[in-house]
Image 1 (tube, rainbow, N blue to C red):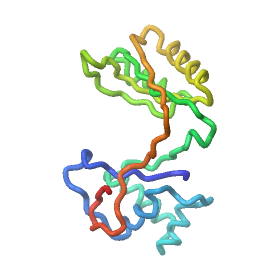
Image 2 (spheres, one colour; image 1 turned 90 degrees about the horizontal axis):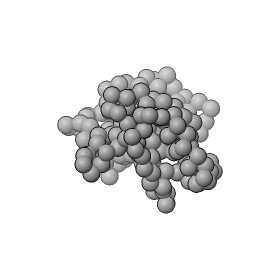
Image 3 (tube, rainbow, N blue to C red; image 1 turned 135 degrees about the horizontal axis):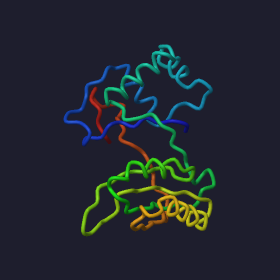
Length: 184
């Protein structure tokens, strides 16, 4: 799978949006990933009886109006040989979290980097970063690299290592549901 669409969750919207039949068909065809083809949007267009340009335009419009959250690559790190990963959490100054998040999120071994609210006094961390490596020691080395990059701004950290792979999918619409976006 190269790309996938992510449907907005119930928390993102007050009411489920109404979608056209053609946009609904496009969501159904892409919610499990784009076809593995040199020109996937054009192949989808052939399947739907429209042009590849119209497919791209419709997807872009649905992203802009919030019916689709994003179109992004979803790598299977395990299949690529990355057998160890850990969700790292960092306590950094709030006024620096955006700057530091961009720095850490840009590292090649970080797949996700988020600013999250603290929940004091129980949870002091405000920056999360998923770190990947082929072996646990590689992840440990990457965490040390992040610590060095954060420098004096690192006020504390922790890591939770993954112990198993969970199925990762976003909200899906059912082929037989009405014209509103609904989860399974």
